[in-house]
Image (cartoon, rainbow, N blue to C red; front, side):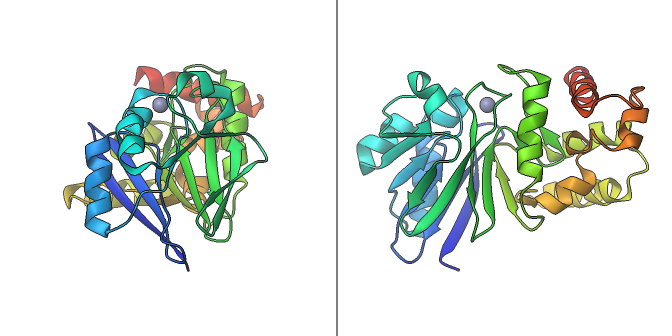
Length: 255
Ligand SMILES: [Zn+2]
């Protein structure tokens, strides 16, 4: 497979990730949380930065753009819907569009809710998805600029990706997320197993990321708002999934 990834922690609890095309040597940084951390990662791998693929405008995803672009003269690709809020953009993309990283081609999915113009990148042949702050392992982003209905629709788009798709998200929140998810689905065996695994990984200083769509479908309560038992658990049996999702998200906000 010509694609390699390299995940690294940065800022408080962010993840940076590099996507490298071995065929051409091109390397993309998915978001740019912090220039110094991205530089260290590039140096560790001996890779040359050619592109920054931005998922959304928040400062902890864009703060490193100016410095990295000045140093590497890399191309900055960003969501069209947030172009006015992201610095130094070279190309904008939207739903249905594609992005090239060397010989690799990613598809652009608009996944609004956390922010109004948030996008995710899916590299189909490699089964790699970079989802920013839309989907987390056993969690999802806070609905800041959109509505719960919008976020639920975005999560359904990601849930439709192949089960083996590896999911790279923007933060390490898994242990806190499983603690919350167990309050809704205490009997979910896959969630219990994920809780044990995540605790073990964090104790060993390992990342809980990437996760997979298949894993999240089984254990992530935010992707399971249309499961009757989840609706019942929040007192909304028979109600629309978007309403169940909204209730689960509201409970997490207060957790
Ligand atoms: Zn964000």
